[in-house]
Length: 247
Image (cartoon, rainbow, N blue to C red; front, side):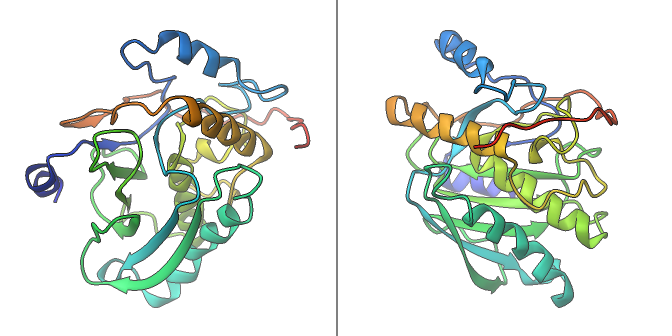
């Protein structure tokens, strides 16, 4: 399927995987340093993930489909729960991006502003899930995407957490397995992490991402080939208590 997308549409597909330090685009090093500063009380790499990659345009209504052959009917509500939690902060993040569940589908949807949730083999075997995003305009704004979940994720709570994590990638957030547990939805590992949606630090980082988007629309990450963006570090259990500042 990845080769078909690349050959037919001639667009870049970015695959997100384990812990990923700030992505430095050519000519964007100063911008990346600004990202690393994070927001007050949400230190990047400690409590908050970095940002700066694929992202839906502000005010987008994303049509969500679930690949019928991938999931049992009883699993579908657990996949939909994160759509609600992310929609609930659409105004707080200033993205005003909303996910609208359309229904099940027999094939991956490549229509404008469409997102397909499915099971499949992830590029890096040890990873639990990945976002594959594509742009028809050659920039970082997502035209359509799919969330691919490893078939070995059977725990229902872990399914919810995995989708919540991958939706974070839809807003430009990158993985942060070095972040304190429960400080960000972006430090999901295979087992349930108890986070069904974004934390205050996630919301703050997305606000910053959309402020930056008003000033800069970057080229499509990784175009024109498929790129595994990071081998990453192995996630480490961290029971350090955290204090997250209010929004």
